[in-house]
Image (cartoon, rainbow, N blue to C red; front, top):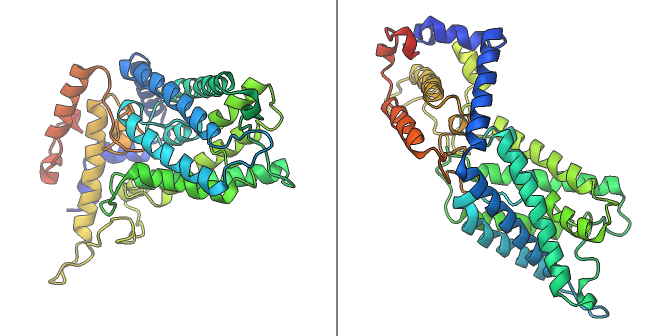
Length: 378
């Protein structure tokens, strides 16, 4: 079967991405998903988890670097290892509640890859920054003045300009989010071991590399906490602009060029009858199906697979009001995407369960039947 046999309406919709009707439909779906999320109990439960988690992050990661005046502090290796293991434990404990972002840079990465709503991004960022302020404030209250010092205030290292620090922050946060997106890629079947531990190890490596250069923040909320308590905002812009930019670039780089999920533009090109270069095999869990053992060419089967995937996505959107978090990568749920992937449902449990049953009923699509399917089903 060729792509040309897909019902004409679907091909027309794929080509007419700039039509006013399609724009209105997309806007309506976005508004619906935002309204559903802001009314969700899971959103606010997750926000509280982000407040608590980022507060604990501030207490422990700042505390690991504090020392008594006049005495040598902990080594860089000790502090980096401590931070890495702590993040691994915290991510493991909160992933099923909020996704364990604990960092506005992580949240914006999942926003730009359409795995959380804009509402959730804003709410999480507010709760993360206030949690970091609370954590830094708690440390200042419970510790003697001789231990507090600069309260872990993040600043460029000796001889490092603010623009050099900015570049370092972009680089390490790029790497951090590139790794995270690869770890939660739902199409990979080659990963083994603990995802939170891998996140912690990535953080550990970044700290070893950048602690003496930029302070290795990677987290705008962590930088904001001490700055707010001490009233020192001199370099704060570096630790917001750098991590946020690095997170956006890193997450989109993986999502656009390396994700095992088919790139949307490739799918549209195939529907329009244009040739798309074949993807490499093996490296990201993709399997080479060009030829089977008897030499049979499977290119036609690949086209059918792509068409079936696109039709599945459309049916999913129709049965979930177009919620982008579920649709882009089937393993993610809008409620709490994070380091561990599928970590929650929407709060409207009965409604979501009914829709999920509808989705499962369309999991296996007969391509021949779709050629004669009623207009309302395609």
